[in-house]
Image (cartoon, rainbow, N blue to C red; front, top):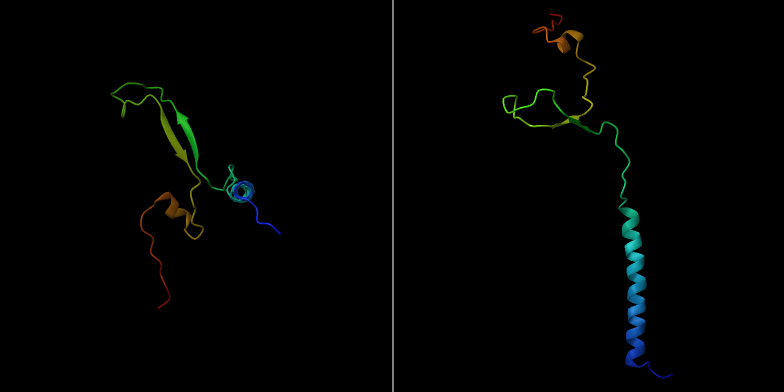
Length: 94
């Protein structure tokens, strides 16, 4: 059996490299999706235009971007704590 010449070796090497590159790129693309699913509690950005414009109001910006995000509510806190009615003392048995 005769050995292949240099042209045939280069041609086979290029075809093999292209096929392997295509396989690797498709595997990488499958693991890096472009559109990730929306996470629960993810922030929402809102563009806000205030009615009072001018440099004398806050920073004088024409529009503001507000980040809205769901806050975590502590279920163990009493309703008085959430209203901020001062200090509550916890009395234990002596």
